[in-house]
Amino acid sequence: MKKIVALVPMRHDSQRVKGKNYRQLAGKPLYHHIISTLLNCPEISEVVVDTDSQPIMDGVKLDFPQVRILVRPEHLRAGEIPMNGVLLHDISQVEADFYLQT
Image 1 (cartoon, rainbow, N blue to C red):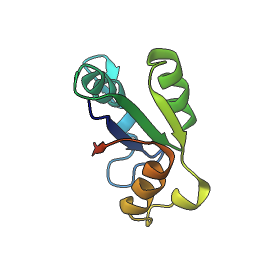
Image 2: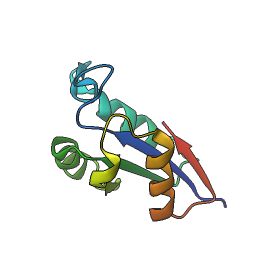
Image 3: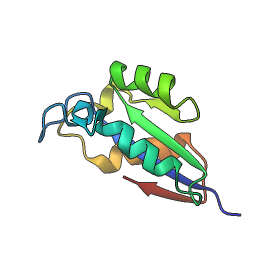
Image 4: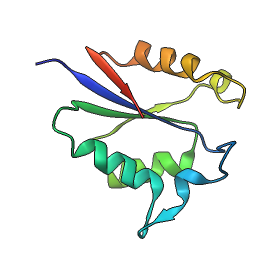
């Protein structure tokens, strides 16, 4: 069976919508809904969160211990960095047959 990895990039300071990953939606932060949905998809072999946010790292470790966390390197944290650079870094760290970016 092919390994499908879901890559979930989450910056601490979202530029377009401030604090979007932490906003409450139906009693949970947005990122909880994203991760839960991905974990409930049987075709996805692994969920990987790429972040520079300590609150997200702490929350993922506590609530989703099966999710892998990649700490985003300093040189990829600025708002003007293209997402392709972040994704290239991620796929160099995680082996898979296919990648899904959310």
